[in-house]
Length: 92
Image 1: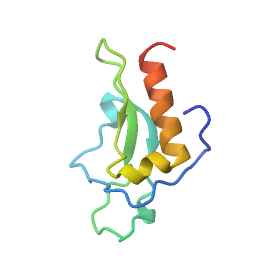
Image 2: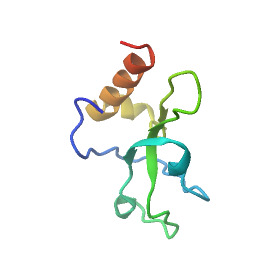
Image 3: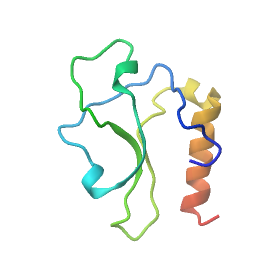
Image 4: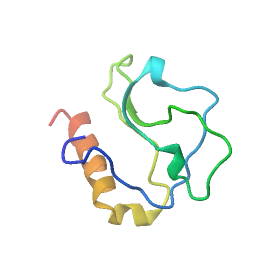
């Protein structure tokens, strides 16, 4: 999360709602503010993780639950997150 502010925006994303939070099994790095959905969704999780690592597997891994549109690669926050994840997974 280095180089990212305490909060950042990803416009026009497809935020999926899970039947249960993955938080008990993963290390959550970022969540989405469900009040920011456009359009607003009647389904809410309350705690809505969107970036996490899973420390229970051998390989370094980062789950980034955003980036469904090519335009997100024009978003500095998204590309910083993506870049940081690659370097972290490669131990750099």
